[in-house]
Length: 298
Image (cartoon, rainbow, N blue to C red; front, top):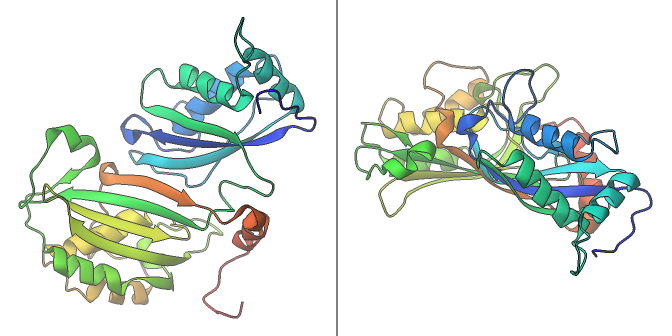
């Protein structure tokens, strides 16, 4: 693959991770450090002689302070930019380096100096791939160390601490009741012209070996602040401020509420993004672009 010629440019998939503590979220913002901003600045430097600088499209735009272990993004390169990477991969006396590997190495050198963002892999994306619209699910984890858990200072950047003892069985029951296709307006911050209809595919709670409560949530997509709101509702159940049936009743009421607190960002990690088989990527992207409905026939 190192010598592969790309005549019409290429779409590149990036698999990356980051510690969200030092970033104001994923999305590029003026005069603010963001993951997209850091990576696109590195791309602008890398391709300054072969413009235009590529832009990134991401699977899930994480909020300020949210971490990622399995984020996915894509960018489009021109044939000239691919040739530039191929030239950079030629070393004296050695085999040429795969241009996609050169891209990952250069991005880590330029954007990874603070050691809080890392591109694990860069690869040529299959036809029809779109990091955002081709995804069929996103999986998150949230960690809470309550009064019954061992509070590990080495995990403090990704674990929320509370002095309350939490009932994990009640939280798990509340979470299970929420699984399914629904309108999540009660759990989302509204955005203009954006739907709040999502399919929550799974939602579980368990205690790990240190007694830390770990939530695992998977959905076709999550709207703004939805995961932290869902976790907050379950935490309120665990501390007996809400009954186990209240989170579902609040969802069915369909409006934002002050019955529970949205949880802090630092306990949240985007763990993995799932995609269909290569032959289904383009069709999946087209379906995702269509506005959602609760009508199964639509």
